[in-house]
Image (cartoon, rainbow, N blue to C red; front, top):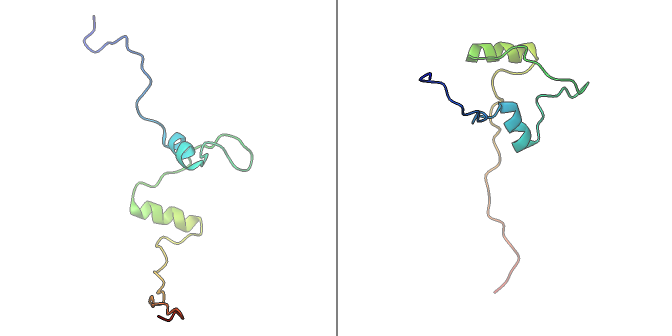
Length: 82
């Protein structure tokens, strides 16, 4: 009998990220939206510099746009009389 050998064949406790996104947000990241074929990994960014490079290759900004200033909230005056 091996020390680490078990007869337990339970499924893994962790779910794949694509499965979780599909079930929570209805976003199917395993299927190509153009041809309905399976998607495959091309590249993953693991650093901030790698993410900026990938975004630049896609023509997207590496930084979020600056926050826009909205007008201050004002009290609405209603024409009620006492």
